[in-house]
Image (tube, rainbow, N blue to C red; front, side, top):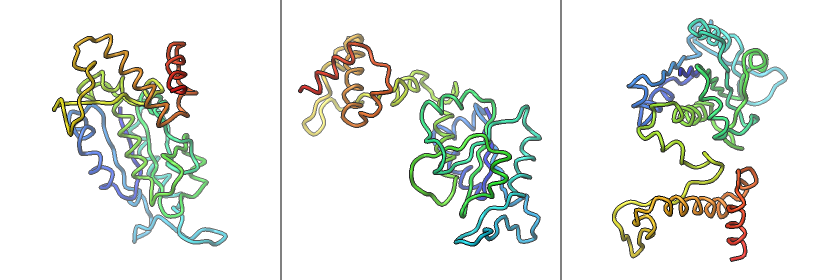
Length: 243
């Protein structure tokens, strides 16, 4: 898979994703990252890519020309026309389900806006997906793009060392992940739950699933309405509510 990022701050993106799991995956060429500086497509000798908004108002707006020319140049190396994602608080909130959908694409283009945004004419022409990472405003689209690339890349085969780890994390089955423990067996007077020390895999899986249900009910009850719950799950949750 190949990620293309259109940005005014290429070092921020390339250096940020060069660390940890994504960095190792890039070194192994499990996926590819192409970070492109939009300023390289400015026709201004000072490399300006923004101007005052028509109609007045505070701030500056990114001009359509450099953005489109950057996009058109990226397309030259693509086998087919990729989806173009623009990060904006006005977009659909990014989720694990969207990450799974996007992980099936061969290439994705991320457009990182800045200032007061991007001229709407070029957005209408090239953007296919408007996505948000939450209802708040950031200084630019670089951090949201990095969040999404991190989340999507984890689903690419070979990125994670343990192929099961992507299957049992939070949100994968619509529930939050169960509690995790490691050595020492007793810490500050608190012991690891006995079931995890039993070696009885069926009991461990049952305990973990019930803990996922409990944690979701306690912390994100809104997720339960969308989760695929069995009759036994519903009975367990009813017991939690009564207690």
